[in-house]
Image 1 (cartoon, helix red, strand yellow):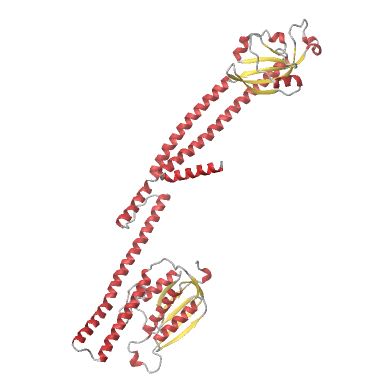
Image 2 (cartoon, helix red, strand yellow):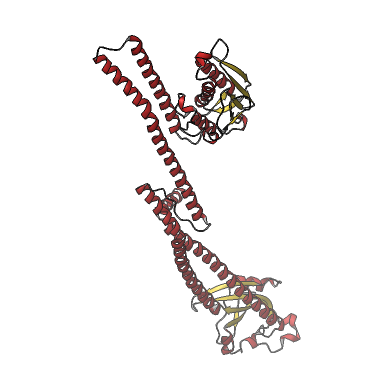
Length: 498
């Protein structure tokens, strides 16, 4: 049985999943109304049936007790003279059963159904009555039969039993049977009406469910068409939305997704366009230098010092290309958050970056103060961001004529502080123009002062990218009496979500 139930459930689930949402809504409405109608119909049928039987039982009991107390119908002489037509008009059968099992009834009238229950009442002569429903095969109908204890007067006596009840009255039971034909017919008609109206209700519910599904799923159909249009044409134009229901919310979420996709695609296009523009300059320079070298070799070659200078220039351009490609690769990922984050000590990352940049800028004075601070994140990406900040500070703290002015004294000053997860890097350069401050973290943005210095304009963009991926922030400002100051804030590992 359990296996059969499991197979039935599996078949039902498989069948249901094959149906469309429209069909499911229609079927659900029909089934729900059908169940409701069935429950209400069964409850109404049972209630009416019980109430009709209860009323009949009360009436039969009252009439049988009164007849037994008055002793009219228990006088067999009187009972046998009752015309059959009088009982037929009320569809009632009356009879008496003695303690020995003898049955007496009205003249030319059928006896009520009598059996062991009625005989037991006649023998006990207590206060208990029997009440049961009996089906009569010959009559083709049902009877509700009640038997109440009574003492009957036998027929053929020469004296009145009331003169000496103790002597003449015999123990027995008065049996009264009421036909259930009218009640059965009423219940049958009620069942037909309930079935008819239930079927009409189910059909109406199915039609209503179909209409509701058609109307309610129309926005979903439009949303499906819009999704198919986007997949076919790659047109990320939002679809019009009206209303505040769940389908409208889904459409708004779909529009938000389209907006995010459009922004991502625009960023990628700008990145590709800007990258092509930035790559064109070093590639042209490398090609020019290689052409000069090839032409010089055809004419007998360059002087060793000129050849070395040309090769150094090519090597510098290749280094710039390598750095630019690495920056582009980092920014092209465009991931919303850091993956495979691990617990790292930010102070170690800053120390390693300071040591690396200090070797590249030996003429600068470094004022470093670092305190431990744990974070969850990507150590490589954070190291790249901190290194970019320090390289930027070292670049602008070094004057362009540093070799002519260097006399053993520091040519610039860089201050690095890491306190409570806040990293501040302050240089001793000329600062950032007010017009350039809002744009310093944009990709490929280079101010007029920065165009004469090496760089791709992606270093600070990578810093912002790393800060956002780790749930932090970065901002820049000018410090009076010094240069530019960059502040990077990252949340503590205890407050970050992995």
